[in-house]
Length: 156
Ligand SMILES: [Zn+2]
Ligand SMILES: [Zn+2]
Image (cartoon, rainbow, N blue to C red; front, top):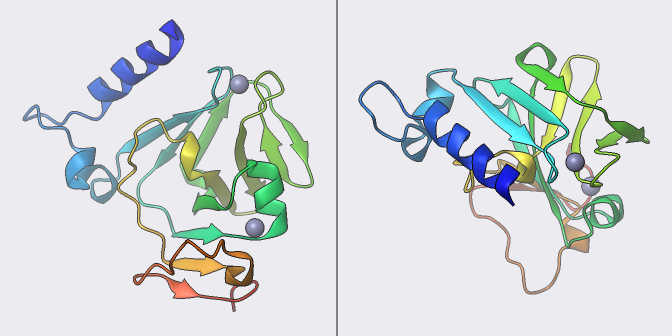
C-alpha cells in the first residue's frame, strides 16, 4: 500500500502544470504532449507514454475477457516511439504482463504500443473510447457508447 500511495503522490506532482492546476483533469496533459505514467499493481513494471493516443477502444472478445479477468478491456494505442518501459515483463501471445503481480500491462507491435488503460496511474484517465469491438460478446447490461463506433467483431 505504501508503494501505491507514493506512486499517486508522484503522479499528482508530475501532472500539475505551471499554474498549479491539475492538468489532466482538464484534458490538457494530452493536448500538450505531456508524459503520462503507468504501472502494474506491484510497481515492478513502470512505463511512460507521450502525447495523445492514436486511438482508444473497448473490446468484449473472449480473449480480452480471459486476460483481463473481467467483462471487457479498455486499451489505448500510442506510436511505439512515444512509449518507454522499465522492469521485467513476460509475454503470452503478444500480451505482456508483470511476472510478479500478473497485471496485464501492454502489447507491443511494430510501430504501436497498445496500453491497457487500467494501468495508467491517473484514474479516471480523461481518454474516451472511439470504438467498441466484439459487441456481440458485450454483457447485456452494458450499453453501447454513443461516442464509439460499433463493431460486432474485429474493427473494419
Ligand atoms: Zn507487478
Ligand atoms: Zn479483445
